[in-house]
Image: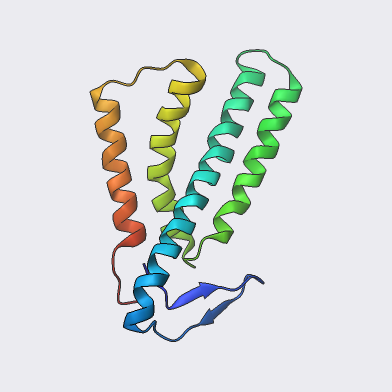
Length: 140
C-alpha cells in the first residue's frame, strides 16, 4: 500500500516522509485494516441501498423502502472519501471485488440465494484482484 500520500481529516493531501523500516510494519496493518473496514461499510451502504430500492420498486413495498435505499446509496458515495489511498480510480476498482463478493453474501442472507461453485470462484477471483489493486507494493 502506498503510504507516501495520506489524507488529512480536512480532506487535503499532504506529502509525508517515507516510513522508517521499524515503523513500517506497524503502519501497514493499520492502514489495511482501516481500508478493509471502509470497504465493508461501503458494501453495506451500496448493496443494502440497492436492495432497499429493489424491495420498494420490484417487490412493491412502498416509497419508504425506496427512500431508505436512496439515502443509503447517497451515504455510500461518501465512504470512499475516507480511504487512506488518495487515488479515486484505484479505490473504486478495488471496491469492485468487495461489491461482487458482498452481493453474493447479501443474496444468501437476505434472499436465500444459493451460489454455485462458479459464483464462489468468480467472487474469490474478484477479491484476489482487489487485493492486488489495493495492497500491492508500489514505488509511486
